[in-house]
Image 1 (cartoon, protein in one colour):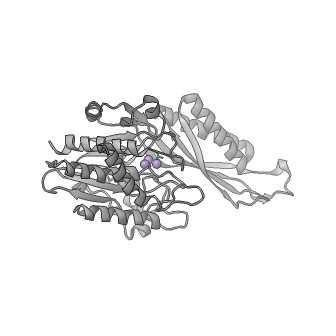
Image 2 (cartoon, rainbow, N blue to C red):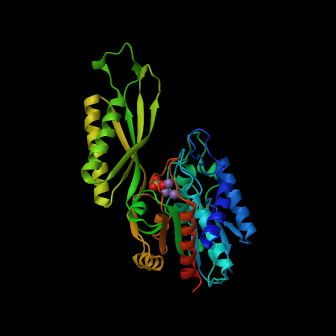
Image 3 (cartoon, protein in one colour):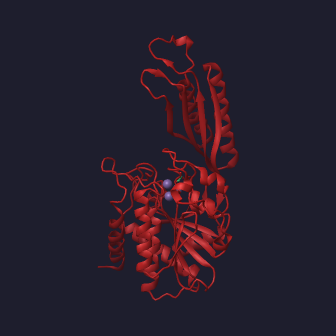
Length: 402
Ligand code: GLV
Ligand code: MN
Ligand code: MN
Ligand code: MN
């Protein structure tokens, strides 16, 4: 068996431990919402993996876990890792691949007898997807002090449980004492598009993350009887909502941007009642901040104009916003040369995007043959995952062992 096959086999053995956790038997996708039972099992698995390697675990009081290899006093650490939580019916790789690869990269360094000059820390961030509490990268935002602690504590899931309740206490918020001990962060992630398939390469280095955000449109009208209300007398917020979805698509296409309405809630949600309220969440992303702002403003203006014509009302609330992230160009170039890997921008958000404002940060992407993500169809071969681990191990030698 070759060295690469051996590593792919060890990847598969660890991966199979996680595979059943939170898997939906019908869709084949994952329901691993932050701090719910499946994600708590993944967190317990993280602690077992850390214990098995003699890596003490720090909980930062925000729900993020950090496992330390090497003398914590030996200097500022190199952090690597990702997240366990998923979107509804998400893929297996988005998040967990970065955590599993981080532990395996530590194993590679140890097996090679590498002596870290500074600690290597494996991290798992909480609520990266924002699928439970609405704000993506909640854990890294809290650690970095980029979200108000009271706001974060009071975010509620669809059952009314607050983040503070799920966490078992008020989040600690900004931890300069901990963040200041990280010299660099490297997040390995499955690619969420087809660039690596097209490039014929197993691994890439990230250059930038598009600015992006989430906006909630609330459309209010008049709930009424579907059979007895004349068409001319209706104030139907579903019409305003539907028009707004089409407008978002059109405005995004015109600008070369991305707009998605993937979540909607309707009240009272009855087949035979005109709705009284429709709420739709717009996810919008663009390469440049001005394009993103122009897109959201244009969609809002069109929604408001249409609401006047429908006799409805619309309000817009920004739920989260992430500015353009340009990863440390020097670091990205160094890693791309080290790995002989292409350098790519992405439209997907990551904890690395939040931490990039605070410390030198890089990302590695692993090829995804389907190019699909946030879906059960997301994929990666064991051989490419092993190539990702090897790349990450080389990066850790470069950053932590010299
Ligand atoms: C997170 O995965 C996002 O980009 O939505
Ligand atoms: Mn994701
Ligand atoms: Mn992710
Ligand atoms: Mn993400």
